[in-house]
Amino acid sequence: MFEVGYELLALLMVAGFVAGFVDAIAGGSGLIGVPVLLLAGASPIEALSTNKIQSVFGAATAAWGYSRSGLVDLRRQGRAAVLAFFASVVGALLVSVMPVAFIRLMLPLVLVAIALFFMLKKGLDDSDRHARFTPMMFTLTMVPLVGLYDGLLGPGTGSFFMIAFVSLAGYGVLKATAHTKLLNLASNLGAIVAFSVVATPWWFTGLAMGAAQIAGARLGTRLAVRIGARVIKPLLVLTTSVLAAKLMMDWF
Image: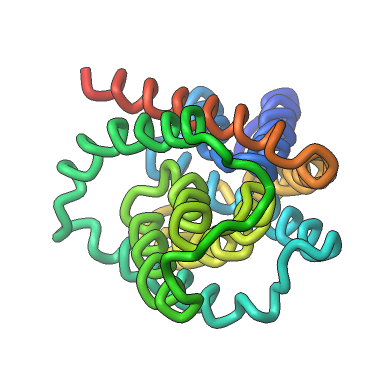
C-alpha cells in the first residue's frame, strides 16, 4: 500500500514528527520534509507534493492548538484562509508564466533579511505594537500575496506570513505565530489541489508522515504557548538561515 518499504516509512515518519514540531513553532516543515523525501527516492515534484500532504496535518494541529489556547479566533480568519487557498491555486497554475527563476534567485537574500530582522530588531517579544495595516488591508494584500508565493515556490511561506503579522499587523511574536497556521494550512491545501492535477504525490506515505506531524505539532504548540518569543525567535532565525543556505547551495 505504501510507496516505500516499512523501514524507510518509519524513518520518514520520524522526519514528519520533527517537521511538525519545528513548523508549529517557527515554520519550515518543508526544510525537513522535502530533502528526506528526495533521499527516499521521490522525484522533485513528488517530494514537493507529498510534503504538502503531510504539512496540512501539522498546520491544522498547530492552528487548533493555538486556537484552544485563546491566541487566535479561527472563525475570524475564515475569509483570509479562503483567499490564501485560491491564491495558492492560482500561483501553482501560473508557475509556467511567472518569473519563478528570478524569485528563486532572490529568495535566499530575502530569507537572510528575515533572519536578521528577528535577530537584531529590539523589542520583539509577545507584546502587540502599533499596526501599520488595518485588518481588512492586511487580508486583501498580504494574505493573497503570500498565498500566491506558496503556490509558485513554497519555501519560507510561514516566515513570510510571520514577518507580515509582526511588522504590518503589529502582532507580538507568539500571536503572529498562532495566526500564520490557518493561513498556511489553506495555502497548503490550495497547492495540493494544483499538485493533484499536475503531479502524482505519494498519498499513503504523505498521510503516514502527516499522522506523525500531528504528534510533533502538538508538542511544538505546547512549548511555544508556554515559552513564547524566547523559543520562537531563535528557532525562526535558525530555520530561515538554514533554508537560505540550502537555497544558496542550490544556486551552484
